[in-house]
Image: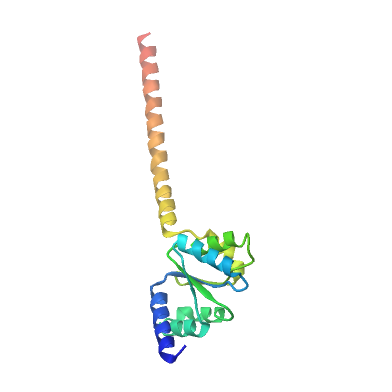
Length: 175
């Protein structure tokens, strides 16, 4: 790879990192070609972009972003590395967990989730539990809707009780 190719690769990575809210640094070494192809296929099906990178180029791209928030990630770029870019913070973790039912890798070296950094493969279960923005919005709507539903239910049932009491008093008065 000549200097021009490296400069181009750094620029492409820089652009991709600057647009990414969520990405994972993984190690898929020791997987067979068939397993890697299967992993790539599953990534594609779930809208995850998997990119094998040179560590030095990835670190240079991150350093050129003028954001100190990426510095804890630099250590993750040691040994074989691939990056999974996604729009859903937990999608790569779920994919990795499911894939590891039949294989020992990929390992999570680090994950960048909206300015938070998770380091190490031991964080996989935490990453799997993360909710997407749509899931969080749905939870908030359900929480907001719940008290109103309870109030309407109480008012409706209370109205029936009051009507029953009035009817009973009316019948008692006429008797």
